[in-house]
Image (cartoon, rainbow, N blue to C red; front, side, top):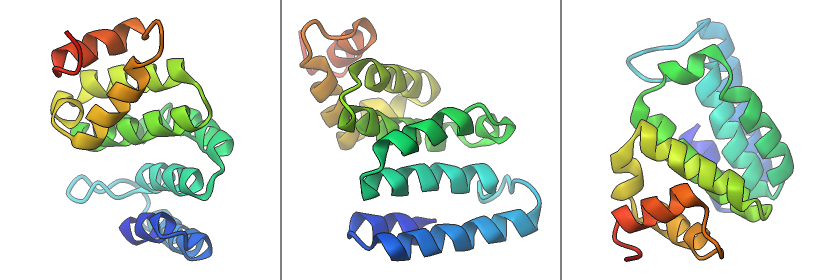
Length: 151
């Protein structure tokens, strides 16, 4: 999954898709979730969402995101994993111009894993981007103030 994300980040979308399919096949054969590695079908789907967004298919990525976070395995993932993912999804919402969606993802990430949101530089950048909206969504305005981005 990490290799797929790296390939997508480098613009190697075909390779990223191949790697995600390979991870999906492995996850399907393992039949479930591994608490030690956080690997399983839901984790693969989260990576697929991010690969799709990197490829520029943000609308489909968000459609899949909505479905995957309703799956049973979502809550079993470690909080920091879910928090980091939600920060990444906030960026995808920004790609499609959905400030409310981005704000909701950031606030959800903060409620799940505050350190992922308050200490991660990428999260602070996304918070600042959303907070610039006038008026800034209430939850993000509070979050921006709590991390020292606004007064």
